[in-house]
Length: 506
Image (cartoon, rainbow, N blue to C red; front, top):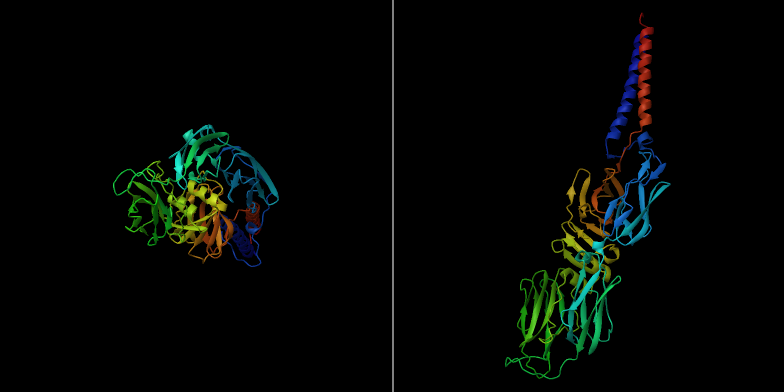
C-alpha cells in the first residue's frame, strides 16, 4: 500500500511538472509555429479580448514633415486583439498599420486606435516652424524678352532658404494668350505682347514681366560671311526627345528668314549619353540627360535629350527656337527622371534601381502632378510608385531592397525604417510564400498583415517585412494556469508526506 501511494503521488507530480514545463516552453518561444493539436485548446492559444486601451505617451504637437510612433497600452497585456489605427484626415496625418504617424499637412486632426471593442483617440496639431515658412520670394527669368514659340526658364528664390523644401508655389500668367507658364517654371511665348508671371506661396507673392516678340522677317547678316545673325531664328523639331538606349530620332531644323543660309551643324554636349550625325540623327547611347546644339552660323537652338529604359518615347512638337539676341538658349536644368515623367506619353515610366536609387521630393511632386507611375526595377523585384499614392513630397524614398533568405522565409527592409512618403507596390520574382508579416518594433513581434499572392505586396509602412508559409503566433503565459499548476504540485507534495508518515510503520 505504501509503495502504491508513493508511485501514484510521484506520477501525479511528474504529470503536473510536465504540464507546467510545456506552458513555460510555449511562452518562451516568441514567435513559434502554431501548434496543430486537433480538438485541444491550450490556455495560451485562447482568444483574450481587450478590456481597455489607453493612448500612452505621445506628442500632441508635431512639425510638418516629422513622424512619431504611437504606442497604445492594451489591457490585459496578453490580449490577442490587434490594434488598428485610423486617421480622420489623411491630408494632415497619415498612420501606418504599426502606428507610425507622419505629418503631411498643416492643421488639427485625430488618430483613432482600436483593439477589439475598445478605442482611444490621439488629437494632434501639425504646424510649421519659422524655418519652414516662406517670408520672401524673388522671381526672375533667364530672359525677359522672347520670340513667339520660344521658351525660357523661371528661377525662384525663397527666404529663408530652409523653407524651400516645404514651399508649395503656384505659377500663373496674367495673359495666357501672350505667354504661358507650367508648374515647373517653363515660360513659353504664344503671341506678341507683355504678360506678368506671378509666383504665389501662401500670402507671399513675387512677379516678373515677359515680353513676347514676333519672329522678324528680315535678316541683317548671313552665316556664310560670319557677320552678326541678329534677327535670325533657328527652329528645331522636336525640341526635346525621350529615347531608349540604342534608339534613334532625326531632327528637322529650319531658320527664319528663309533668305538666310540653311547650313546647320549639330553638336552633342555629352556623347556618352547621345550622339548626333552631321545630318541631325540622334542615337541614344547611355542613360541620362544631355543637349544637342543646332547652329546656323551664330544663331542656334538647343534640343534636350533624355535617355532611359522606359518604353516611352516622346517629344514636344512645339518649337523651342532661340537666337543670340535675345538669349533664349538657356536650357532648363531639371532632373532627367522628372523630365521623363513629364514628357512620357505612357502612364508608366521605367528606370533601373541604379538609375533611381532615391525617389526625391521633385520626383514625387512630378508623379503627384501628372498622376503617372514610376517603375524601378531592382534585383529580384520591381517597385511601383503611383502618383495617386503620394502623400508627401517633403521626404524621400530609398528604392533599394535586399532580399535575405532565413529559416522562416524571405526578409527585406523597406526605406530603412523611415516614414514612407507614399504607398508602394512591390512585385517580387518569388511567389512560393503565402503570408506577409511586418516587424513591430514596439512589441518586438512579427505582426501579420495579409495573405501574399501572385508575388505582389502593397505597403505604406517602412520597416522589416517577412514572407513565410508559417502561421506565426505569439504565445503569452497564462499566469493563472501556471500558478494553479504550481499549487497542485505543492498539494501533491503535502499529500505524499502525509501518506508517508501515516504508513511509516507498514
